[in-house]
Image 1 (cartoon, one colour):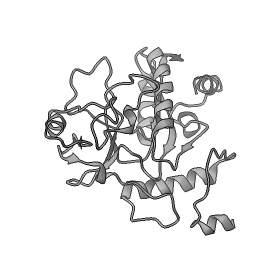
Image 2: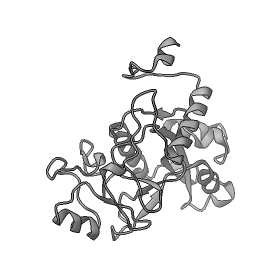
Image 3: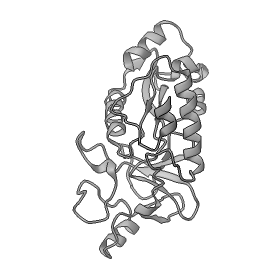
Amino acid sequence: MWEESEAFHRWDYRPDQHRFYYYSYAFISYNWDPVMAWLIFNAHKQVNDSKLPLGRSTLRLFNDSGDGIGIRKILDEYDTGDEDLLAFMMNESTCKRINDPKYHGDGKSRVVRVGKMLFPHAGLAWRICPRCGRLFTDFGRTFEDLYSTVAFGPDLLPGLNDAWKPRTEEEREHNRRGEYGVIQYVFCGSITRPYDAPLILQSAMKSERHYVLEGIFRELGLVVGNARHLVFAGYSLPKDDYIYHGI
């Protein structure tokens, strides 16, 4: 994406145009595991930490996994606490505002690019807040290790995922009481448990979807419909997906 960004800059693409700020690829996963997301996050972190110049601004790479998804922030050198750090996925409207040319050129401005990374069946560390109904996810405190299992989230039993550590006092208190697998939603303070994960079965028979997941499914259709090339990696159709088998 760095080389592509340089090429677009040389070709004088305006940074606030769709053809510039969106990657030339989109990633779609029907799996619940976060392995590919973790690898992409780490690859982007290397670019972002390098503070690579693009014109008179600094290039930053992000992902768009759907509107309305909250994420508990992965800490950086500017963060001093871990209690209430809530962020949201980057999206197109934010890109356009940040990349507006009239805000660039002071040596401290940023040029942002974003890529679609969609998980229509949700993921293991995704939770729906039982109180406010919002959807959020948590990939842990830091990018500790490329091979870390922290992005899988907390497990039901202690010791199954040692990489995951409680991040708030409320989570630590639940762990002390023997209640494992909890994640606190920092927006409203509610505690979520593994059964609050909105996992969609790998099947043609779909359960009712959260409104954010419904938006992801619609976004998926647009992405695939506008793609020039489709690359399938390790996908096999469930037996009950008779419609797709017929296609």
